[in-house]
Image (cartoon, rainbow, N blue to C red; front, side, top):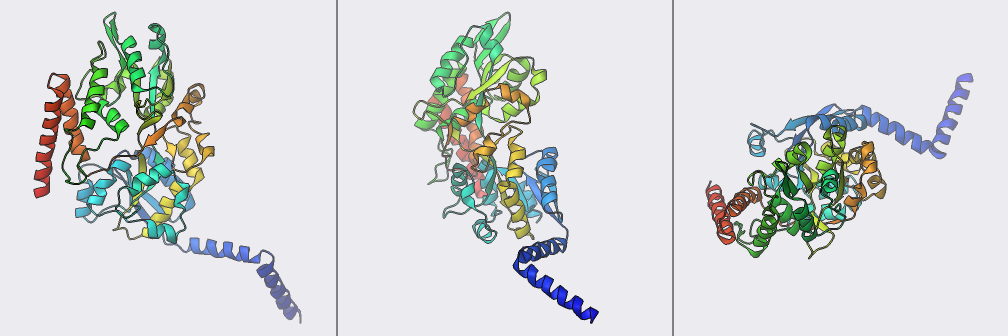
Amino acid sequence: MFRKSIMITLSVVLLLMSGCGGAKVQEEAQGTSESSNHEPITLQAYAYAGALNQDDFEKYVAAPVKAKFPYITLEYVPNGKGTSPKELLTASAMPDIIMTGLRQLINFQDLDVPVDLRELAKKHKLDISQYRQDAIEAITSYGTKGELYAVPFYVNFYAMLYNKDLFDRFSVPYPTDQMTWDEVKVLAAKLSRVQDGVTYNGMQPADTIETFGLGLSVPFIDEQTGRAKVATDEWKKVFEIAKEFNTIPGNEPKDAKNMYKAVDQFFKDKNIAMMPYFGTRLQVAAKSDAELGFNWDVVAFPSFKETPGKTAEVDAQVFALSKTSKYQDEAFNVIQYLTASEEVQSNFVKLGRALPSLKDDKLLKQFGEEYPVLKTKNVQSIFKSTTKTPHKTNKYDDLVRGKIKNAFAEHLSGLDINSALRKAEEEANKEIDALEKK
């Protein structure tokens, strides 16, 4: 009789559970059971162009994923000797997840590596509309029928750092937000000089041709022919404005073939007044502020007068999924979590390295919180401009870009602009033809 009473009581309890919230309890229990039944797996993540270094990867990617999916271990695969995309594919060793800069996504498309994520997004209920529209539009431009070969992890931004001490020393007004390149040129001329044996540059970007080319969204390859096309009015305009800056007396580049030396000149030599480039330099300044030894600040990236308020082509760090992955659903879940989780996005945005992939003003307000010094800087300037639609990317862009940089250095040395552009185009097409015959 006692046993029968217990059974009746248990039946009533179970009946109540199935009604007032019991379903939720059962669902949670089932979810826990399902999670605990997962076999441990290891997913490889390939760090290609512009991807996080291994320390940052472990802290901001692998650790959050392990906390969310205890059965998943992420393994970092660096790009290097023996691990180029082609070598990995040939060895049937392409990692599950690809972390790359948006402009390098074309290299994986050429090898038929990335999965079109539209079906997986539908299956796992990923809301694509939550991401920044400019980043999504840039990614879908890599397809021909709306394919989604990646999703954005974070969006790069552009900014112009400046050395306030140099402006003060030479009694020149500080730069302001929403300046045009013509206005910046006027400031650069006032600051460029040789004083006490030291050459001071008014403005040097970390890469002159890259900076102005991105600002005009100029293509490197003719979309119809697949061949280099740089002997154009567009590239001529890029060369002209780049030369205008680099021939201001006292503002000549230290090495026209290696403009990245401008970064050292700005931070270490302290002889460059303004340095416009990708916003990652803002994090560099914030991290090393105490050691820099000069007063600095930031303003919005300049624009061309034809497109005021437009900085340069949208650029992002993206996640793609390999067709050869044996764990496509699990890898997609990882990608979805990293790109759509406010917590993960927040942790990264606080570093001041990039903007979130999500359209969320709350996240923007957290920008750079990891560095108290940024509270004293004009960081809101980076939100005052918008990006431009990128040019149609081609797998040979980097090849042509290299030829253009060499041509610009020769132009500064005296080669006329038309000859320099024709030479770059001819050399690029010669190499493209050779590669196409292989």
